[in-house]
Length: 535
Ligand SMILES: *[C@@H]1O[C@H](CO)[C@@H](O)[C@H](O)[C@H]1NC(C)=O
Ligand SMILES: *[C@@H]1O[C@H](CO)[C@@H](O)[C@H](O)[C@H]1NC(C)=O
Ligand SMILES: *[C@@H]1O[C@H](CO)[C@@H](O)[C@H](O)[C@H]1NC(C)=O
Image 1 (cartoon, rainbow, N blue to C red):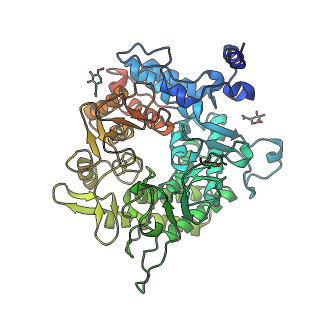
Image 2: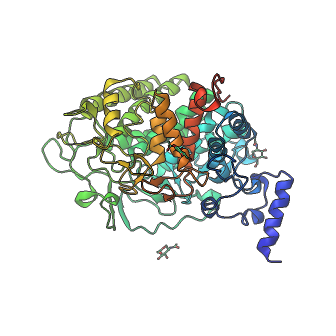
Image 3: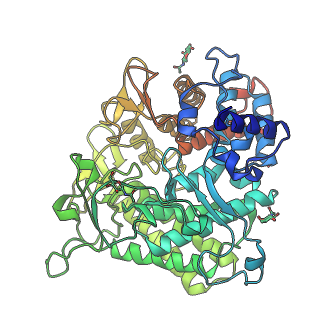
């Protein structure tokens, strides 16, 4: 009998005994199929609905983390969902982060760490969690925050999820301290996992360590997502335990980057000053590198906006004052000020953060709102402070579509409504892509024939219209034929997609369904159904 057969047999035996992934011997874990290939082919049992969607969770022994409270939410939701295909998609998508992406976790209660104080200033102490994006063995700050969003509401009652998220905050803090301009990171050396070989040829300043960083694209939203992971954790648990010395050091690092990236291209004597961050890649794709020797296009002084070199799609910005992450950062600075205040932090710091957040929100409104001949006042996607603007939206979050979701404004806001109309039709948004099979907002990252399910989910989450919500969700369901939510779908053929294993998109799907379950249960649970809230 070949060894592989033996190991698969062993896995089945383990499953039969209900052994969870974490307790599985390493040799058996190595027998688990690679999830990218596993996710690319359908597995039973099938949903029994019109689309007969497959069951795509890995075998129990192969899951990277398990939680009884997450299993209970799956049971609660799938027993209520009327549509069997939506239920199957939720069953696969909601636990996807835990099932497949927790590559390394320590809960911080080892004998060694107990001896140290809670507010220890040493690196890599306490709980730690390394979460990969899916098909690439690296952690994106943005993705990992969003991958955990759906478990935050369970963390106050489930200690293992509490430790998991606290660990993720601690790990992100270490990443931010060492390489605040970078977007994606290698497994920490303490994990013993081999770094991924990123074969791109990049020239980046400030320099970074390739065994620590997977990719170093400076995206303002990565830093806002670091703050969001903490503010969400506090919102759901009331805990301020993550405010360690290391976390405050990471916060100071974020503020230093903000200050450096608020500098214009020319100083007050009109002399060119090279930005602290530059990035150049050997590539044939314009969105993968920066103009002007890696500096990017010129930005004017006096806007109060913060530059972002790249977008959350990892594509280069055209004009560096990219509005959505500035809006997001303005909210997060004010939110984190509240948490630090609750924890009894320094008044000066609390006031500084509030002030920075308010000033930035004002700058977004002053420079981000532009007049459009057809739609009236709208938010631009990017501006440069000289009057130039890019009018479009991209599926990745933060986007213009997501402004209410980010907490920046109310969805009834007039300028937002104008903007929403513009970006959700072809006449107003060059990246609104439609074809006979699929439609939605896409972006330059995959190209002009692919729309992204994530944009439809955001459309559902920011709508007050039952039919728009249902239509958006059903279109995503129809395009998720392998039982998981993909990155992008061809507008001409629903079976052509990118990324079989993209954990963030699955998280956004689950989040959308949970929001509908709470706010509009009749849409998915049937007439007169009671709302369902995670608790
Ligand atoms: C934390 O991890 C240690 C060592 O792996 C383990 O013994 C302990 O049970 C864990 N505690 C919790 C709450 O999961
Ligand atoms: C990484 O990949 C490049 C290109 O394929 C190769 O030349 C290099 O040896 C690899 N490095 C490691 C450490 O595997
Ligand atoms: C989804 O597919 C079904 C057929 O399976 C079709 O009736 C329905 O109109 C589609 N919904 C959307 C929103 O495309």
